Image (tube, rainbow, N blue to C red):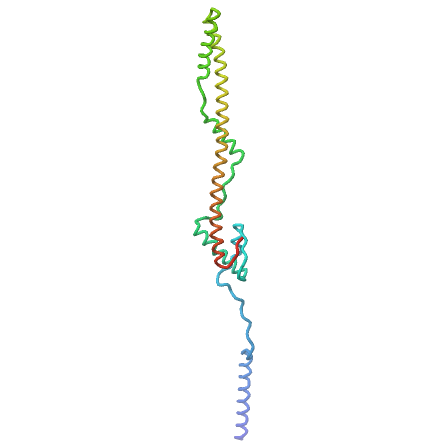
Length: 213
């Protein structure tokens, strides 16, 4: 009886030990088998756009940099170039004057043009003097002076109007040219600022092993 009990206990112990080992083996990874590794996560967020394309530049990797690394470098150099140059490359360029702008400037210039005055009076005086001289020869200086004054007034007025018209045309032309010249100066200043930014941007990428065109 005692021997049978011992045998039963031994069999029960061996059965429990075998199940425990099977459970442990089922939950463990077999020796020599490696678990799949997770994909590498970039150290910095990858931009969704190319900073170089925003300013019309082409960048080529010179040291086999990945596309993600290139986007990161472009973004960092973009910010550095903006800080160093003090230029915001996204600022809008100056607008060219429209034909309406030029016409408005010309009209304003013509209105502010200096007008000649007193032409009729000066013409009358010169005409009267000449008429009196002619009238004196014919024996009627007063009549000659009156005729000469009338003619001189008409002539003086016509010359004054012509001079004023030329003055207005000249002022209008100068005003139109001035507004276009101001735009050219503003555009040149804008282009210089963008050029300064691009130089700083290119220098930064060049130092990181890229070629910028």
